[in-house]
Image (cartoon, rainbow, N blue to C red; front, side, top):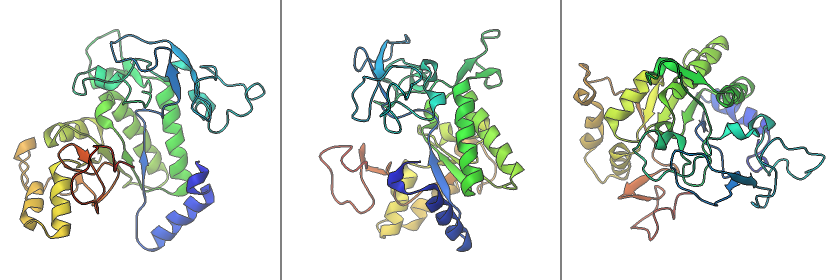
Length: 299
């Protein structure tokens, strides 16, 4: 756990305090990628479908001087905790797809196997070669995805977490997403958490989001397009509230007969780091006017 955010005991106290106040706590978790933990030999190659040579893991200063493989702390004592990647189970080169950054965000398999900008894509598995069907039921899970499941199961058990906001689901193979959701739901139920909630960040519009949500077993989709814009306008008193609430009544888009189906399947927020409502620009809820850079208010 990053010491900048406190200790494990601090997290336990936060969750206990929230629960005593009737508040549920949801962690923002990432399964699709790691940080920019290594450098390619060619620095920043674009996806071509081929694997690229890696120069090395980055040290605490970001320099790629650590071996790209299991780290021996007796040889590299300063590698922990801010160099390479930890836990050590993720230091195998096959943890990563190593296929360069995504250029075409709507092209499969590039969008699933490429790096999300500088963030390094994790290898979750593949469709079974025996069938080649590409079906979600034919997914072979990698050791990396199994290790990720164990990591997030730990935080549920340790801190009594109530749900996950699962990042960048669009960039995960549906088979990987369904495996993760199934493992986490089953584990939570063993702990008595029958209503553990997994919210998937799925860009690409409501129709795509709900198709992906239903086929993978996620509980809801995070709304980050016009839902976010209209919710912000509602809170600020800038739009008629009907413009926001009508989004949840029209279920014809996803061919559902009930007009209340969107009720607990769309989840959005007034403010977070993905807040987008000025064209392609990201900025926080209280920001005003346009920004000179689309990333200026990202963090």
